[in-house]
Image (cartoon, rainbow, N blue to C red; front, side, top):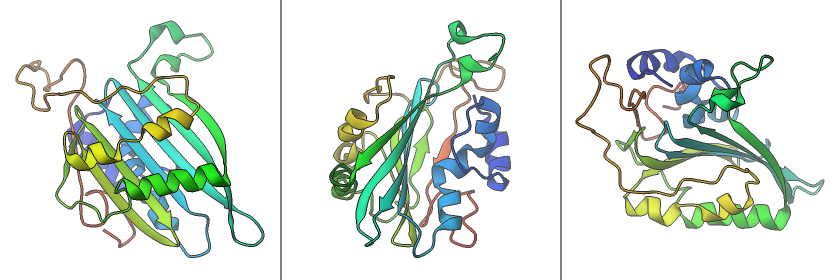
Length: 232
């Protein structure tokens, strides 16, 4: 899926405007996407509030990403939002076709339009769960674990937050509400105890069940290695 040593070095220079569908492009833009680099670089007063959430449920098993863009009416009041959900799981070779040879490695996407009340309730839940707190500098997010990240451009200012299980902050934030409204046919994987430093690895590069483990490190303003245009 992703080679940690290469990705860590290369993704610092690669940007993402959305979640890439193919695994190769995804590996080169993943850090920037999770860190919300494009949100930070375009964040300015007057643009619609945007939120990006990533739920890592053991990277090779499932990753769910959420991009929420709000809308306002002509009086500047919240009128609703669009929620795009993208889910990756292990490759399913049954999905391969002649016209779509890369389909087994592609994500399952869904798009949901939310009304003003539903959007406000979701944003309130993000805030109540701690998702708008300052970035927990020094937090390390392991690909074989369960964690949430929240990148946001809100009121013209960029912010980032993250929490990994079994930290109480993760439990307080875990968004069952989002799962219930995302419209995606792939059910979420619920958190479970995991070992993020497995002792048994292959002899060819440290793969664990075909996956090269990697970590994301949180800085005071986002993710280490992401170009925030002077914000990091």
